[in-house]
Image 1 (cartoon, rainbow over the protein chains, first blue to last red):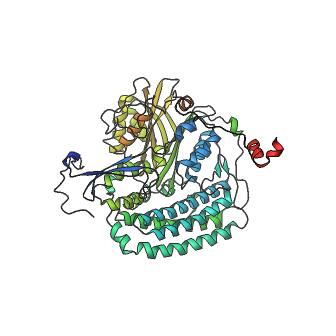
Image 2 (spheres, one colour):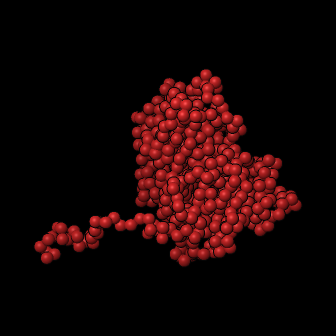
Image 3 (spheres, rainbow over the protein chains, first blue to last red):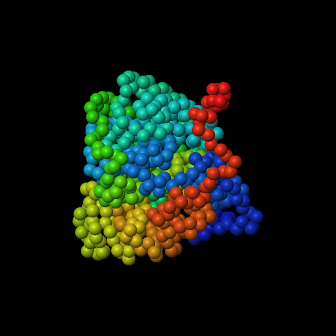
Length: 390
Length: 177
């Protein structure tokens, strides 16, 4: 929590940052990351401390830059799919969906109804898996390591279902231009329902042990307050914006696939701190479970799942540009694709929510936070570094 | 939305309007008009969310296309603003005073495309690449294959074997002789 004497020293700059002179011997510089359990993925925070409080924070990325966007400019359209999934590892399906949708829109291809339902199912499954992994990060950042293992076990149940559908546990590549590679196998609904029930039981345990835990509450309530006024200025989306009371949800605002046929509410909070964000994500998990059940009941079990496509190895898309967005677990995820009439994309640009959350927003929120809470704050923003450097 | 574009056309030099969807339009604006247009959209037309800011390299035409995608969540609409810059002297006014996150986008564009944004915070600091000596890597004329051949090379003292032959020799030495 903020030190009550903090406003006396150090003095503030006009832009609200602290005046720091490292030669005064009153400050110490500490690097948190790139190899640190309290960092999400491979990035680092350059922290300047006074005592145990953060006076200044700078985000450094570039530890896993592989130039995905540049690589895709040198690949044919279909060859982009094994690359794009690497941009957000815990939820690769959003990359597949956004990329294939931009190609389909630019080439004027309409996908079959069954493929739309299947894509929605995959997106909700990946949202559920990613949120369950986030629970692990959030609880472990506050020293509750056992809950992290429960979360990861629950995520593994979802990965089993992904493996059953696509053959891959982490990277599925099940959505391809024109539709999907297949519908659900026989007996899938039963196995999925068993998994969902088990996840609900685990979630009820997590509710008791994490959300009613005095340590978690004491450390997360009031941590990392995001003022609703700065939401647009800092490009905040997803649960981070909804915790500030702003009902932004791409699934409701710009319904894609079959989300307009599904029944769900946009969950918002009031307090805009780490605890509220965690609570919103807990409710999102329960919403995702409900949505998966709705989709499983209503989706067609047979029928066409891929549109008639030209030979994808010689596929040319006319010159044009478009942007497609989807609501991933962390906020607005989107692909801006430019084509030039050749067999290769001219430019593909990925909009990952972490780009704004982990750089400008994190640098602002970390100031005056205790060093021990930096990891918890970072996880409460739910960031994945590969989206930043792409 | 159509009325808004008509109003903008009266005040700014806009061309090449493409309606990608009913609520998504792309248009090209003169370089000098770009920041005033973006400011008007942000302050008076509720386009308060900067979705992306990126560049496209049209090497053949000698131009960079800067794309600003702005979103209005009240009327659920997007405007993509294209600005064409000369590749030789790529420079653009900064918009970090409108969105704090624009500084990060501009820092990345400076590093990856070599487009300068004078006055943008920390624009000259490396963002992803450290100690980069070559031309900005996201330009179309940067040859990734040539660069990797020059930078990375086989380590001396390493030899490679055909797996099938190698295992045959190892498991059944008599047969292979």
